[in-house]
Every structure is written in C-alpha cells, then in structure tokens.
Length: 443
Image 1 (cartoon, one colour):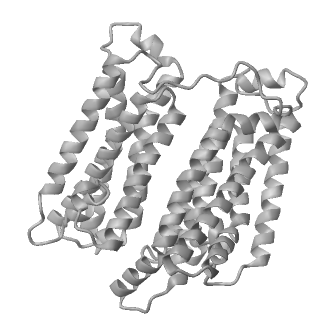
Image 2: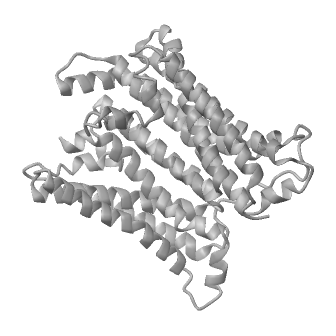
Image 3: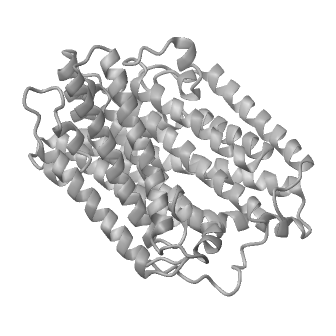
C-alpha cells in the first residue's frame, strides 16, 4: 500500500536526488578549480571522488533512518518498515553511482546533468511501459526494483537487493576506473570545439544568451517531449489501472491533469536551471566582462529574464504538443491533439510566475536562486500526493499550479491567470531595479 501510494515520489525524486548529489559533490566541485589546490599535495588520485561520493551517500543513510522511524510511528511493522526504507536507500545509492559515472565521463557539470537525467528518464519511461503493458521483465530496470522488494509481504524476495548491490558496485567501479585514468578537469567525452568567430546574428545580449543556452534548452525540450508523448499515449491505460485499484470509474481528465501539471513543472525546472547557469556566469566573473562593454545592466537583465521565460514557455508548448500527439496515438482520435496542447498551455501563467520567482531571487544574490527549487518541489508534492498526505487547502494553494485548478477537468481560472501574470511582471520589474543597484559577485 505505502509503496504503491508513494510510487510517483520515489520513482522521480529519489533517483534525481541521488544523481544531483553525486554530480554536485564531484564534477561541480572540480569545475570551480578548488581541487587543483587540493590535489597538488600528497593526496591519492581517487580521494576527491571518493570523498564526494561518500558525502553524496550520507543523505541515503538519513533517508533510511528517518523513513523507518516515520513508518514505525505510523504503526507499520518494524521489519517491513526497515526493508521499505532500505530499498529507498539502495535506490538512491544506485542512482548516486550512475551520477558518479556521468560526472567522470563529462568535462563539466552541465553536460553530466544532461547525461544523468537522460539515463533516469529512459529508465523511468521503460518502467511505465513495462507496468502498463504487463510485461514480466521487471528485473532489467532499476526503476522496477523498489516495487519488487515487497517489504510487507510474508516472504520478501532477496533478488532486488543483490541486483541493487551488483549495479551499484559496477557503476562505482566504472567511475573509479575513469577517474584514475583521466586528467584533472577533463572527461572521456571530448567537448566539441566552438567556432573561431561569432555568428552574424549574434548582435545583442539576448541573441548571445540564446546561442549559449540553445544546447541545454534543446536537451530539455527533447527530454520533456519524450516524457509528454509517452504519458499522453499511456493516459487511458494508466487511468484504467488507477481506477481499478481504487474501485472507481475511469477518469481520464484526472490522469491528464497530473500529466499536464508535470509538463508545467518540467518547464519551470528548465527555466530555473538556466537561471542557475546565469548565476554561475556572474560568480565566475564573465558577466562582469560583458557589462564592461557598452551594455547596460537593465538591458542585460531584461534579456536574461526574457530568455528564461521564453525557454520555459517554448518547452511548455512543445510538451503540450507532444502530449496531444501521445493522446491522439493512444485514443486513435485527432480531437485529443488540441486537448493536450490547450490543457498544458493553461498553466502558462504559473510557469511565468516560477520564472519571476527565480529572477527575483537571483537579483538579490546569485546564491539565492537555488531556493526557487523549493517552490518547484512543493508544486510536485501537491501535484502528485496532496490527497494521500491530506495537505490542507491553504498549503496546496502555496503552489502556483493549484491556483489554476484541475485543468482540463476544471474550467480555466481567468482571474487566477491574470493575478499570476501581474505578479510575475511585478517580480521581473522589481528584480531589474534590485540588479541595477547591487554589486556583482565577481568581475
């Protein structure tokens, strides 16, 4: 029961946390150049990577401890609670190992994140297809293993534990082998050299920012498009499975609401990642070089805000289109094409507000922009598990997505959309005024 109800959160958040921690404590630290000073001393070649992986594994141990305690306090059997929590911990550590491999293979953290998230997305979509189709191949995919642990059954199987151990050990071994053979600051995936001259269309701060972010933006669009098409295609089957488990009639609108809200959260996450990249550009001093030229702070910041908002809305539109295509293929009815697109675009004001929040935090300090992940994280919890966790209405309303209601099941809330748009514009204007008056972090 617990494993089934919390499935969405565990299958999405747990692996992404593991991937992020592995890259943040290894490749991201190496990108700063601080490891050059450390490794200049009598330090083993693998010591920095081992320290980073160890630090990334600590949250997994805390997850096991707190999850076990919470389940026991809720009245679940102690042995089953420990097995369930231990499965979560092994799940996180396995993806931490995958993140460690990506960190060693890529030359910078941004590329490592793209590679790692691509691996998770492929695993997640494979799990969805296997479950919906009822194929008996759960042993091939780590996303399927947590459910196979069966912690509260009379005789829990042991093969998922051995599978997790084998996968984790293999991935850590590969990461150690690559780390021992590559140069400091390098990776085994060689970067493509850029052009010696700038393209003729790069004539403004906005065009420069588009050029610098088109790779990561395109990666987000491809990943979100695959996610949206797959779940659009599986909407009917997943709605039937959910209804059968709850003993209720099939409700396609309820299932579609979850998917289009996830499209909005993906669009907001893409915008936030680009905001964090802009913050790193400031702390590295490169933005200072740009502002030393005849480029005003207002023009630069306005261009950055338009860039983040534009990428978010473009991704949202593409995700909506692919959701509609998936629905069309799944239902064999072209009328669903427009339904998927319009339902997704209904959350545009919420996505714009997320971009405004990121802009306001970044204007205060580049280090504060990461706090915007709290808004996206809370939106994810409200979207997926609000009913299970019995979250009160006022707390649900802290998520901008909840302001719009359950589109397409509910009518589009125009007053809420207008309010969010006004708030987003106000945050953008305020962030511009703040940015004009504060000092740069570097440069």
